[in-house]
Image (cartoon, protein in one colour):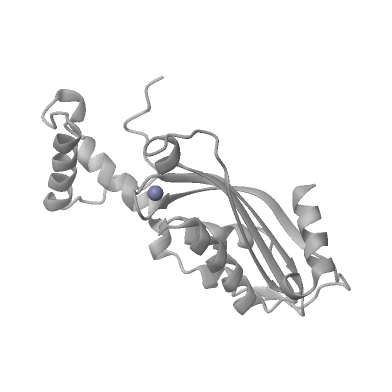
Length: 201
Ligand SMILES: [Zn+2]
């Protein structure tokens, strides 16, 4: 099935693409072995340019902003909050190839909780940039730790890397798993075991 070349987000597609950006993409097409003048490729440089602005929209999204509305009223709740299987896409900074996977974000509240969708927004704000999975994992955990001031944070990310499946060793279906534990999930073995069990259940 062909992709829909003109599928754009509402309001997108109007941003002018500087000539040097289009030219760079034409050069890349030539370098890849095709002819940028070919009919099917004529508008591709502008589409690619706008697509990259969208893939990298995280550079214009402050992750901490999503944690600026926190709630003090927790109704006596003092157990782990887990958002599981959050799908995300990112791009590796070494090959600009897709990283596709899912993240699990858990925290043990201190005095504050946050709207649960905000945890996913923090993830996407960091993921929609050029990344390495290890740093993405740390950045999400550190941001929640710093701004929500919980007793513990656990972030586990599982992803496949386009630069491994489509090039290089060409190994499909290999999943890379990274985790970052802070607070009680780092210091207390029992708490860590509990949260990991919750994530993997
Ligand atoms: Zn890579």
